[in-house]
Length: 291
Image 1 (cartoon, rainbow, N blue to C red):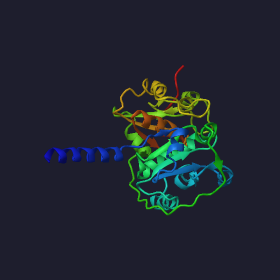
Image 2: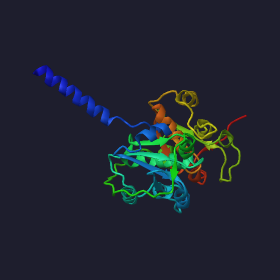
Image 3: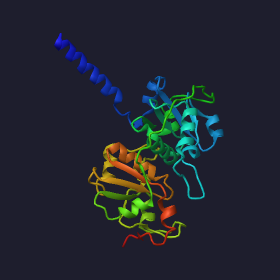
Image 4: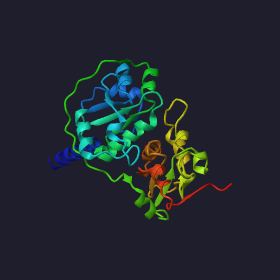
C-alpha cells in the first residue's frame, strides 16, 4: 500500500511539474495548427491597423494593437503601460493568468510583436507566452488558411503580477561599471559605432556591447536556430548569470534581442527610455567605436 501511495504521489508531482513548465518561446506554424484549439490557448495577432487585421488573420486570432500595451506619450515612445489599463485590455481579449498566449505578426513586424512579448511577460505571463516564428507569412507558407471572420470569446480574468524586467536611466547610470550587469545595444553596428541617427548624440552608451537585432533573423523574418543565436551572444555575454540590459532607439527593436536572450537562458531586461531619452541628457556618457 505504501509503495502504491508513493508511486501515486510521484506521478501526481510529475503531472503538476509538467503542467507548470514554461511554454515554448518559439512555436512553428505546424505546432500552432496542432494546438490552436487547446482550451487555454489565445492567439493574438499584432497589427498597427485594425483594417489589416480585418482583411486577414489566423482563424481564432484576436486583434492586439501595440499602442494598448506600449503607449506613446510626451515623455517618449513605447512606454510601459498603466497596469490597470493593461489589465482591462488583456481581460477584454479573453486572457486569464492561466492562458497560453501565442503572438503572431504580419509581414515583417517582428520587433513590434517582440515588444508585445516583453510586455506580456512584464505584466505577469512570463512562461505562458509564445511567439509564432515567421508570423502570418510562415503560417500561410505552411499551407494553412487565413480568414476575415472575427472570433467571439469570453472576458478573461487576468490580474497583473508585475515582473522586474524594465529599468530606467537611473538603473543604467548606477550600473555603468557594474560587474554583474552588461548593457547591450541592439541597433545595427554602424549606429553603434557612431553613424549619425538624427538623435542629439551619436554612438552608444559608454561600455555597452553590440548584438544587432537584424542579424538574429533570417531573410524570411524567422529567428535563426539557437546554435546560431548563441554565436552572437557568446563573444559579448559569456556569463549567463549576469543581467543583460538591452536598449535601442525607443525600446522596440531591442525586444528582439530580449527574446533571443530569453530563448538562450539569459537574464534579460530592457532600458525602456533607450537612446531617445539618453542622448537628450548631455551629462549621460556616450562613446563611439575607435577605428
